[in-house]
Length: 587
Image (cartoon, rainbow, N blue to C red):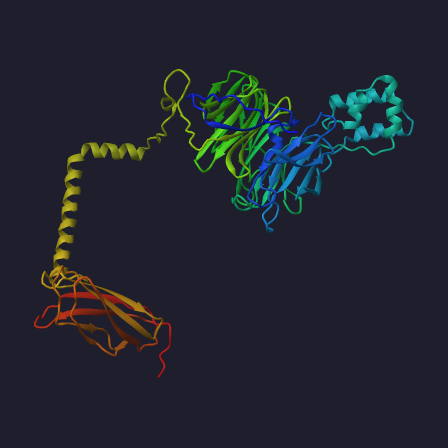
């Protein structure tokens, strides 16, 4: 039964309450981590559900739970502890409903419509041949369990291939339990199976929000696999120097992608599409406990109570008041905001943008998982689970404003940003010396050329006005404007001339239009037109037909002259570029 308890006011850096307390159930019974929580529209109705991989007691009670609002919608039993959970689109079928992939042990369990759909098992690893020989000897009775233990211990210290789980389990037994264990397992073949440590998603070919995504899996055997979302075959395999613990993926598999991995040796590695080994690595001062990508930067939380930002090198570092328990990204596209949510051991959740603390949320218990996104129909929803199994839901106010001020003492943040100054080349130095020595002469030459260009443009403009070569009349007594439209594919075109009197109140009369064209190419039914009285402000369309008489696929210019009775110079002139006729002339 859910119990709603009112929360205390949220404390923020600017002492304003920016979060609404939507729900708090201290006895929800959810024991999970951020890697096993996701939000997805599992019904295609526009409402996102909360999907949780519940760890239960650690030995039993592992379940896949789905919440809608404040109520538990469904739950399914899991066979092993979940290590990761993601929602992804595996096909292009309508309606667009994502599947849920749960990583557990060596398997990926895929659920579609909240029902089991597919199970993928990681390929087996190479077994040490010397270890196989030892088990074969004990099977045939050639050696006793004590001798077998000594031989397996020697193999573990010297061999390159690690021992199987069965042999490691045998070495941990007491002497009186060894014989029973050997009798139970000696007839079974030896298998060495790895387990999944982290899981993520990678867009297949498009970056659309509902685009098909591949699964990216990190394993205990220091490998990263990319799985096809439909056939569930391994598309790519990459190796790492150490087992991965956290993973972040960006890009598209068919185009370019980048996989950022935090490994158990305390380093961050970056995998690219064109290589099966890391391209870059970043060494940390202590082991990572959280990894979040914000834009092109990677934010890492470490065990030394610090938060650090990286690209391919370290950008900044800030010290936290308590150890980090969990981290998650806060992405709000509607506001263009990206930040990092950090859950601390002192019952606080901090919101950072770069190294600036923007908000501080007090919680009644230590937060173990954080998820931010669209829940129901609300975009800015913060969902948290606590160490005691509680469930908290907070909603970001639409009026919330985050003050991005640097709260750390010392110089301002902008002072530490390096300017990207390019290196001085020999050509740059030579040009600088030339400009310094001949600056006055270069300035005079520039202004001389500029004056000549202005004079040439002015002469051409005056010539066009005097010869009426423009589509606008310069006469104050007959201010006219004309534009032409050619319609048709050929051989017959429709030519429309739109005439307009731009005077304020004086009409224009006694006008005519004459056409000049190549008679070998075109024929016009009315090469001379009279224009009626033009009232100011109205547009008068004048239409005529032009027939192309050539089948050679060429075109020419038709000149249009607007004439006034009693004047030898046209009021305005237009040149119409005729299109090429696409039809054949029919006799």
